[in-house]
Length: 159
Image (cartoon, rainbow, N blue to C red):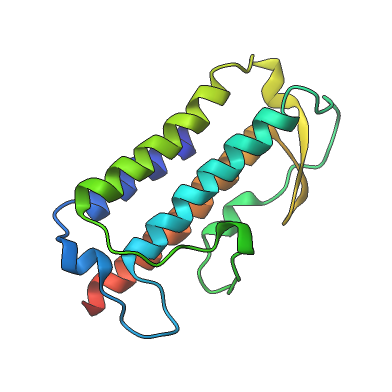
């Protein structure tokens, strides 16, 4: 889970010191604001928590080919967010944004705290990689978050 944890720490560093205007400013109609990026990450945590709660314990432990989940960090490969994790455009304060992200991550962490070491070997369905072990599933969430940290850096450079 270190990639998951490390990505969140890096996210906090990138968001540190941003004011309300910077969080909510949209550079163009076809790009996300930092608020929207954060809302997308919040929704990813909530969807992951729900998926893991429903399927994690009953997923099989089986042999499978590990997937290159780190490729999720690569922003040169464009991706479209599934509708379930599309961000909601709203105006937030820095405190509200942090509270929403913390609450979603806490829900994910509560589910993860119920898993044993062997549970992380379970293989679960994934929309991009077809199937991932629970460990790789969490690594994917971390790599995906790092992708959006790069996006936030790009936005900050243009603000």
